[in-house]
Image 1 (cartoon, helix red, strand yellow):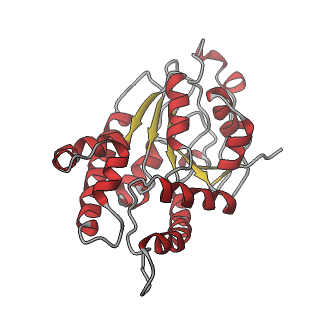
Image 2: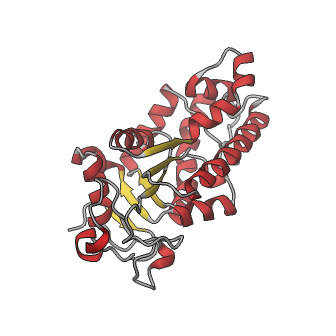
Image 3: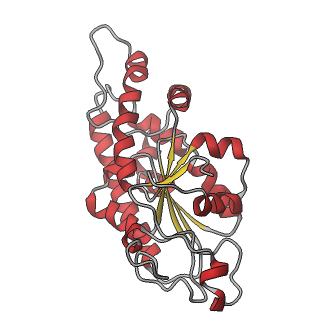
Length: 271
């Protein structure tokens, strides 16, 4: 029965370890191949998108989480990290790269990055938006290089909401090196994301999705334009994703890390 997790574009081959990799020996918990990437669907073999043999001892799961700020990416990164995954957090890496500028203004933490960027109608915003994206591109390139290197660790890439703006090459590498999971908001949850952003702003790249009307306050303009930003990004997230999982399902199912991986493997359907 489908419970809110679907594949983006095509139905991938899903082979449980117990039936496909019986000769692989004992496999540590949370290190099974969740599913094949889109590039392998037509082959129905035991190799992942970059050609690794999934039945060899030491094969590890590599995931990327994408979605809007507040969708739960960092929450699931923490859970998977506690279960043994190595977590690569792009927010932290961007903050480190911006450290001199943040320190000069007395800013720190992800909230400090948001305060440094400011609201999208402030004079310094566009320049800082550009700087932030440059740091994000650098951080993603570094992270993907690390993911591509041989490793015995399960890896979780915790991206930012603006990962879809990092360029075709980076998005393509992310898709080829990891299974990309989009945490999707329902319309009701989109309202919650807007409220969260207004009450506790996170760094957001608005691009061309913010327009303040004459006489409109910045806060009112943000509340009006944020749904447009979500709708624009939704299409980009779906193009990147191998799997799409409803935020509502994850919130209501009370899953642990093992349950999250089982959900990805067992509750999929074509988009």
